[in-house]
Length: 545
Image 1 (cartoon, helix red, strand yellow):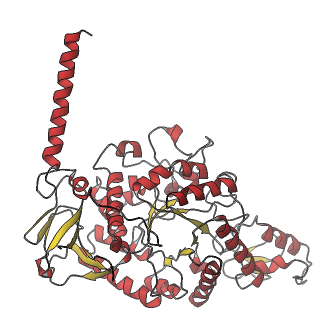
Image 2: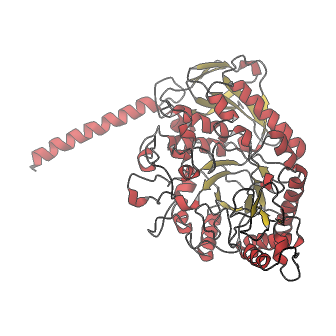
Image 3: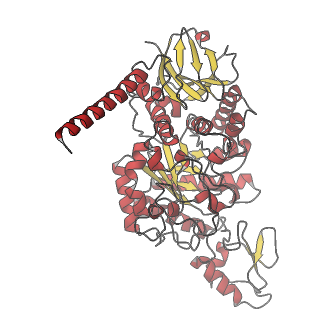
């Protein structure tokens, strides 16, 4: 290339760069103005300072381990793969991990445990787990162990020894627990009760509510309780920060009082080993039963009534409920749970490994509706949970395997885990992560910015919700989040596809718009006490000082 041609090319590149810079300045210089810009929230929120959590109010990332990140090329996600992605997890804003079961098991999901005191070889070793814990703790990230104790695997030595012993008994001969104490670890019977399955052709049956290969444990057995205490002690000594307890409504099927009592045993045992141990429990049930379980003293219970395709958030986003209804539902839930346990911490979520993924809920949506739905969950009080891949709008519904597809880091199949056996060919709706990182209006950047705002105003997670009297626009979700000793905020959300105007002057207090969240290129405008919210947008206000 000649010197003249080099000069011409350099001039063209310089002019192009100046044009791009001029566009950026024009569209971002006045974040309070009305110029159309996809960059408003980035410019407006750039001075916000997220506060590191030192309590149990966190933003949690759920990882289905085998589908997240493969570090050794065998196609299965593993602990070292998670460790490789800690920069990504932390940069997105998450400060707690919930890992689905990591203990040895014959299934891909690992909820049927063969050995409660080890790591499944497909995921790594105990040393790998310790290293992951150590690096998480250095970053201020806590880690929850997923613990299913309603049942074990049928391959667990307890069950194997009990079954082998029962096969030696003649018809009518009763088991001798001094010979085989493990018979009392499960519910064996000569008659086939509800939820029981035959033990081959022995004439014995055992309770297995979920699956024949998941025999239910006898949680009334003192020896089983001692085994559970030993398991909890093992993992707490290893460094875990808490537990996600699986299927607590199934501890005693159809007996809420017994479930609450056993959950109280689990909580008291954990806290006797580590007073700061955090416990979140899965209770796939209604609000009244969740409130009953909070009487156990458990820290958190997943807020299922707001989640999934049939939950309150979905009802708001499809127009069945209004923004005002959403605020009322938050307030009534908080009051109900607080009455049962004044120290409760809500555990809002929108999807998890057992539900369909949210990007499939809105067939015609190109992003804004999917974004807004998850923001509703993230703006609830408590310890908020996000399922891996939701931040990039992965799809998956129907059979469980479809809901647990490999994290879509890129289009390069060599970079992805192998899909679970039996999964369908799930067609994704949104781009993989690497492409979304280059798009400021992507789902990924929206998630990151929502978490950024959430973590910058500690009262959002820790406070109580109050309605605002005099707001006549029911399409907007307008509420105050307050807690004694913290600066309150007012949140205004447009949960519809149409622009909404909300008069905030009814408060009689001067407010400052402190943060904005845009799902489109339209700006939020605030003037003379009235906020104009474009489709699916959020504004956070604080008192003017």
